Image 1 (tube, rainbow, N blue to C red):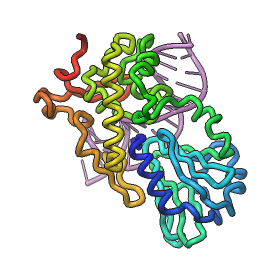
Image 2: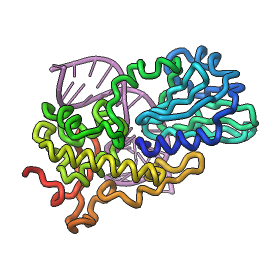
Image 3: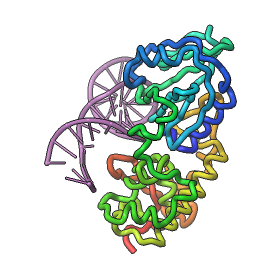
Length: 275
DNA sequence: AGTGCGACCCGAACGC
DNA sequence: TGCGTTCGGGTCGCAC
């Protein structure tokens, strides 16, 4: 559920709070979150200073000098900063003790999240990172790039919007919002999309993610605040979770269907199947 | 190669 | 009331 706007909010908040702190210990009540050798992971990060925290798409990079923890929140991952003496919550799986009496704790009800320790100067060589496309609000996301990326695909547009190798960082919520703003039906095939429609996708992606980032992302369903940060973009959502309600643009009833196994919300009048 | 789908998880929502 | 069942969602890996 955390998509790029939410992940940026988490990275920025963490950055303000814990850059400069030293990790003095780590405990891993559920260590399957960590990819690769858990022992190496633990040994390598203890006694390191947190030098930078950033994100790329949905990945968070917690940099400790020449090593970086790449962290993906998947569905419900969250970070909390709590006093070391505070009792562990049962969903807190990775506990890093910092040098000021607090912990950085990774909390994940679904246990889907991942952490990978890599060399900082090799982040962009990692397979998970190298294949990612362009962030939605980056100027190099052009209509030509989108057109080139989708014009020979038979996949529905909803699935293509979720394809991280094309647009890096959209998830189920913003994919629906982008298609609504671009007036494209979620089931239309990539190969049927014209260049001027790619322009609308590009503009919608840029506008929506820029605004959502400014508002701190969306706080909906199970993805509530972490680090005491609550986003407000959920009040701006035009179609997502609004099935059965009236479209703000035309008054038609918003429908919910499944596309590629995903709940998909759209307006049947504003987003026509064919044209 | 491109596409489809189950697996990974577990709490909430639902059905009986 | 209380039980069992279904659902969902990001990504990977396997099957076609």
